[in-house]
Image 1 (spheres, rainbow, N blue to C red):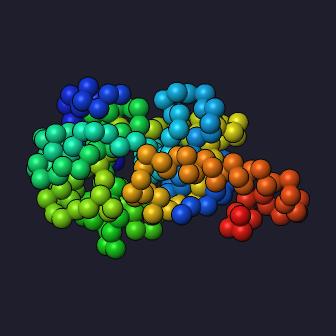
Image 2: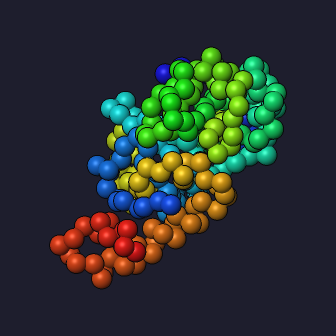
Length: 214
């Protein structure tokens, strides 16, 4: 996977969904990670992360709830087509803030894109990004991210195992939520409400299987 890097951007940026489980075996591309309230790492405090890759080589995710004040036209001025976009870029994570990613929601797979889940795709190569920027786009279906979250496979599994993350089901609507600043409070509220209900759940039934009835 080739990534596009934009020089000098780190300084400019500054540094309906169902909770499924807290089991490492449920990690997969498209799943959404919601950090707990007492997150041990401040870089991930109150973060909502879409896993865009999860395989034997490790895991890669994008924070989908941290919209910056930097417009695409400024952040990606080196890319053709960026000048027409006034919508802001998102801070995808603390790693390599000069690396460019895009999420696209489309009925057809965009040229040069990688599958994540459903109709949501990842764009990382310059040609694919410039083609997407040159066409008509909407923040409801296309977003730019700078930086990412990265783990080796065992590291993320261990973090889930010790209770650092709630795992939520894949959701196209959540990936392109129109109020990203409030996404974490809404999802952590759902997760905690379900957790509070666990003692009332039939012990023979999975603690997360009842979520749709909550």
